[in-house]
Length: 184
Image (cartoon, rainbow, N blue to C red; front, side, top):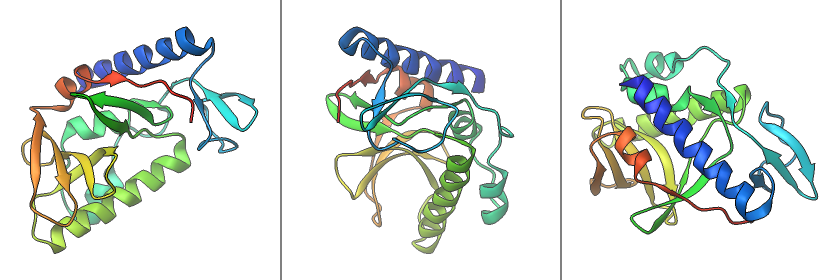
């Protein structure tokens, strides 16, 4: 199953990159990641960095998160975060805008794990089911997460019990996304 998740993520990323090439004649560009070191960075253009995905080169696990919370994580989430280095990718899910979060570099991987730990600590304090975020929405109070108990992809409102099931698993969720390629 984890190979299927990695393949679905690589397929989406390839589609995303192809749309950038077709629309702008170059690789995806990011102003937010400009001058931030990464194996993905190919070229600086103005105040943007052009990037292309690279294979994940660190140890492919989220052991720091598992140790910190004494919690075994969904293998699907581990696969998601350890498949590749890439820039965050805007997309739509059923016409709703989201941004698929990605790991930009080894340093960013450390930051992502710290943020996952913080998120899980908050969930534990609120006595809520553990979830692991994989995308943001246009609302600051909602994130797209994976339920660590079921593997379902949900949209959850932070700090509340409010959640909506979006897909039975990450692979199906990724396959239902449409890339959004707009210069920011």
